Length: 371
Ligand SMILES: [Zn+2]
Ligand SMILES: [Zn+2]
Image 1 (cartoon, rainbow, N blue to C red):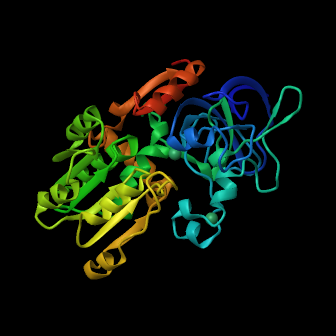
Image 2 (image 1 turned 180 degrees about the vertical axis):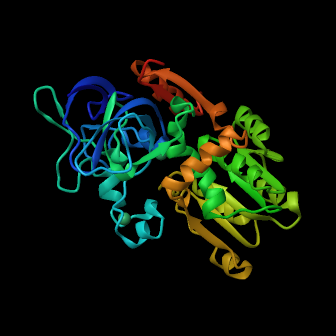
């Protein structure tokens, strides 16, 4: 079938719209007609080529409608509304424990650019190979072939065009707070970086009843947004003495920190501000060379019983947690849609530029009639 997709691997600052041939869904797969797809920083990082082979169709916050079922698919019907999350094998110990973001096969299944048998679902109009199955979706496209585990069914009365970011950015922040760190009523937390992930973490911390929520960012407007979403204390990231200021909010440091940045200096800070027995969660590794080599202060971790915790996809099981997040939205407790900016699919270059510059917190491409 002829589809429109945005292709990475031909240079340029953003994926370019092209016509591609897409094969029919194979056994265990479905074809999704995409309605919208969010743009996440992983897409920005992968566009020039990092982990995945090229040329490739990126995109991993897709939302759409089931259009065709491959052989053996059960539990879905044509016309179902779905959002797409990461791919996973379903059989390894992590998958069986309901933690599919730590699937043993996560790298080949999400970043391999093909199925495990080596095939791809896409090719150019003259037959040249194009990589697909990015996070099991490659959703910068009018249509996507997805393994059934990637799709999460959503209620039809929810606004589908808004839901894609639940599949990565929002679940990374909200799941990080609720599922991974298990922040609870009366706890204190500092969130570093208030982009889409950090703001989702702030909303979730408010939702669970955290007593003090400290937001740290360089951008005044984002801090203002963090305050609207529930931050009790906002600190500019370029101020002096940030660590003592944050520790001073509670007098003894915070129970949790949640770092969404890749700066080594912020990783240091996120450990420095912990109270005794505090846990520092992080969702991005320190970028090599950004501000020198980074190493945790082991004595402070030992003496305070502190923990450092890597978190992927909010530790969440998408099949149960994403509908739960949508329900929180419906109840007005997770207003993530306020950080979305919509762009017609054809304006993907502008959307990428606005994501890079920070002008848009969470750009969403509209593929369907809404574009
Ligand atoms: Zn992502
Ligand atoms: Zn697995």
